[in-house]
Image (cartoon, rainbow, N blue to C red; front, side, top):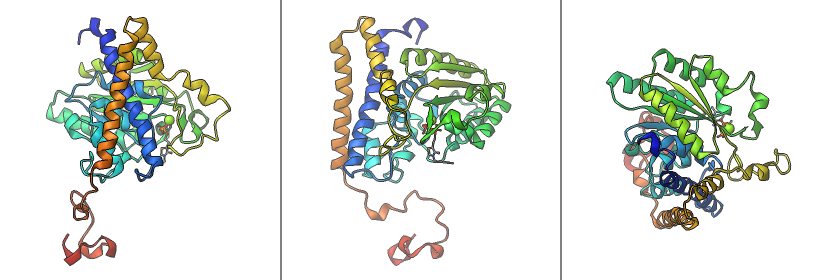
Length: 340
Ligand SMILES: Cc1ncc(C[n+]2csc(CCOP(=O)(O)OP(=O)(O)O)c2C)c(N)n1
Ligand SMILES: [Mg+2]
C-alpha cells in the first residue's frame, strides 16, 4: 500500500469493521460464557481493538504473530476465522485447536497466528524463537508479539528483548499498556519510567502511541514494521490504552475508583473511529452497515458453534504430546484396552 492510501477513509472503514468484529466476538463470547457454553475463563479485548487491528493491518499474511492470554482480538485481526474461534471457546468440532485449547490457546498457523498463551511472557520468548528461525532460514517475514504492561515485570521479557537485539532479529514488540495487571494498577508495582524506558535500555528503537486511536496506531505500526522489514532490527511499540472490562468476564471491578470505567469508556476506540470516518465523509449508513455486517457474522458464528458437536472422546489423545509412558498415566487417562 502506498503512503497516500494510508489514511484513505475506505481503508479505515475496513479496519473499523475488523474492530467491530472483535467487539462483537467479545460481547457474544461473554454471553456464551454466562450461558454456561464456555468452560475456563475468557479475557476480553474490549477497549483495545485499535491496537491489534492497527498492527495486524500492516502485517502480511506470511508474517507471524504471538499473542498472550487476551488473544481473541489479535487472532481476528490476523485473519483467523471467528467461527472456528467460537467453536474453540465452546469446545466443539471445528475449533481452531481441535477444541483442546479453549480461549487461551487459540492458534491458526494458516494465517500466521502462532498462538495465544496463558503463561505471561512466554509469547515473547516463543516470538523471538520464531524470529530466529526466520533469520536462520532467510525467510522474508517478520514477527509481531503482543505483551501486556504488567508482563514487562517478568524476567522472560528481558531475555526476549536482549536476545532479539543481540541477534538483530526481525521482530516487533507491541506493549499494550491497558493500565492494569489483573486487579493491580501496573504503575504501582513498576519501578522506573515504564515499558518504553525499559526497551530503550536495550538500545531498542521505541514508538509511543495513543492505542485508542486506530488511525494513529495504523500509521505508527506502519513505521515500526517498515523498520523491522527494512532490516533495522527489533522495534518496540508502546500503545496506551485502557481495559474497560474486567480482567476476566466475571470480574466485578471492585478495585476501581467510582466513575473510572465510565470516564474511560468515553475514549473507547470504535466510537472515535466512527466519528473520524464521518468527518472524512463516509456516510453514516455505510458506517452502520460495516458494524451490522460484523455483528451478523459473529451471530452466525455463535449459531454454528452451538450447533456443532463435541469431539468424539476417542480423539482426546490425538495431537497431545508428552504424556510419558502409558504405565505411569493416571487411571482416568488410560484408554480402554491399553491403547495409547
Ligand atoms: C507466569 C504467570 N504469572 C501469573 C499469571 C496470572 N495472570 C494472568 S493475566 C495477569 C495480569 C497480566 O497483566 P498484563 O500483562 O498487563 O496483561 P493484561 O491482562 O492487562 O492484558 C496475571 C498476573 C500468569 N498467567 N502467568
Ligand atoms: Mg495490562
